[in-house]
Image (cartoon, rainbow, N blue to C red; front, side):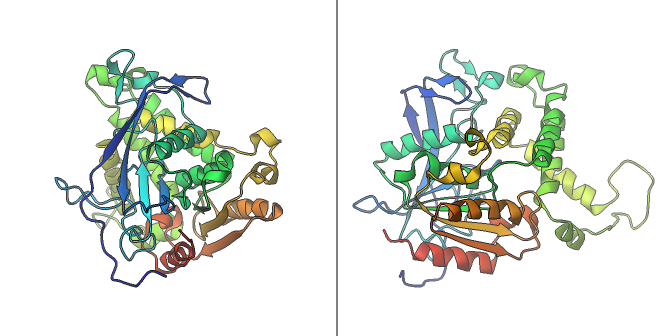
Length: 378
């Protein structure tokens, strides 16, 4: 057991870049002949390279999982409350890796990066990528770092789907898997929300077929609307009621289409902020990767048959108010693993924050993760 200390930050971190020249065949039929991945690491890889933990990010996440940057001290990693000395994923014990997925917009090969074949930005020409493609590229990065087997692969939401896919694609290369606030595949309703968000972007006059970079513009209106739609699904009705209720900004009805309710102001703020830093093509690619993920598809929809390949010990966590990836969806994963007599722990945590609960510093949630990571031998 690691000695208890007050939780600390990993401090200032520096992104790294790995170049790959071995072609990567994609599930869509395309090929990336040359590509690169941007990643960060926290902690120290032990002598026998057995303490590595891969953290997979969700739709709008990145490789910047913990710590800060020297030139941007306020840019804190998206899971910083979880990772660091004395935190649930303790970097005194584990060597933690965060990778920006292919097709992302934070430095890895993607639509806003240069296509080596043309010398121009990829734009809409960047090929479709899937969860399985991301896992394959992450495995190649692990090879580069000399990591034959991960002590654990962890992720929330879309990151949880990647963690599950790791257990299926490389069962001998991962010992433990944590699938948090995720699902074995999207429901029709979830696909519908993603399609509405994509249509908001595709119908923006500034989209220009995905080649808006060449026009010096950004489909801000579409990206803003896409984020507003998505953000509604990340919150619970209770959390929105508690934060905003039906509060009016002016204390009365103004009978206009301007912002009146506080929830309207909040959604517009979130949309504007997101449109200021995220890439529209990446949003399109990532939501389609979400839609396509379905490991049971090749098994006639039979999830137990699909998960029979897994040999890792699993931790599955859901949150009671998460209606985007409800606890029922997590239990499907648990039942399929139990059907195959796999070791699996399941927790359904009562948290009012909805889908975003997996990002929060919730005491019971973090205590559970601390206990789980503490049991992993490296």
